[in-house]
Length: 178
Image (cartoon, rainbow, N blue to C red):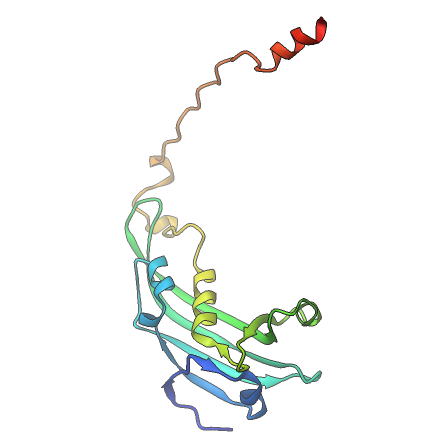
């Protein structure tokens, strides 16, 4: 087992070689390299703290698991104020070649498939960025107690009844009679 130090994690990694060596990384990735994530939030820490362990299971399947943490600022959709959002994401991936349907179907449910490139490497940066984006709330809202817009302040519009238009197919009914 290697000593763990806080390092900048590699963007590409060979999961099979890493699992054979039982590699374990505790390090960071820079959010400046994650433009899609940056575009999805109002602001974010400079670094994502990541722990990742590469292993093989009883069936000899390669997988890597771990967790990521960072803090982001989101825009509340209720009051338009910025609020802090702690991101804690756990993951467990198993590499698959060329998105082979059979390989993916045979994967145990605990593993999320992740594609390797032609060199057998996983793009950790892209994979982790995807996971962080997926972990964001669908609708960013403060906790109700912290939000300046209270439930009582919200007004909901009245929907006007639809005006009764003639059925456009009524003409066909007339034709049918002849």
